[in-house]
Length: 342
Image (cartoon, rainbow, N blue to C red; front, side, top):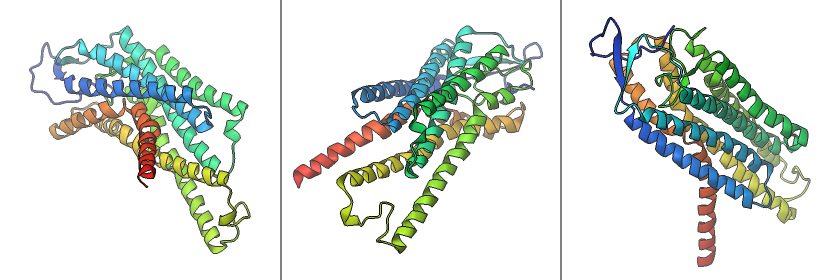
């Protein structure tokens, strides 16, 4: 099965072959801008971690996540450079060939590893947040940290290497992706391009959509139960002490907990969903048509979604920069200004 034939086109056939073209210029501009902002945001996060004296475990997870998102942004920039060579439009012939392009394959390998690793570190951050709330720091042990790196980098490398060995990485003509290479979209791919799309990204993305919110639902349920318990027995708390006897250190820890909780919600709705949902929608459209041409209205919707995907899939590191560096800095400045006025 080949998914190349995606759009209706009025162009005449040439030697019994259907041709169509894709104008990548808007997507290239959006991807290039978003990826560049992510690279800059990543560098700022790395610098902040270098200057930070505490270097908490949460911050270390953020840095690992940023490394993955940095590699993804660099890979997308390579895709922009490659697609810029095609000029105003790329003419595609149906049935398409599976010619090998070393730059395309290399870029695809980088982005597959980076995307899979990003999903893992996002999941680990959510799990760590839940465990911290329950008073557990088991993930912070040396053994678990080494295991986290082994899973977070080793499994993505293994999956990408297997895909490379089966020669499925390459030109997909934006079938479920933006202006960058991913899985070859041609008839020789076995069992199908969709299968390899699931293995190299979409299955893990869907698992993240379901797993991470489930973790936070459990967290919110536990918070609600604890709140109800403390409201019913106000003199009995987790520390067996009244509100007036809470130490300054505990108050500081409580503030940090509330801050991390807000950022956890930010990750769910902004980092994961807002940046990734556009590509998932295009993937399901692609799967639903099973290689048949898109209706004109579906074609238009798919093109609009590709613009959003071009921004979202390249913006994860920039979103982290805004949430963990820029916004806290602005909040601190506003707080200091208010204290100065008072």
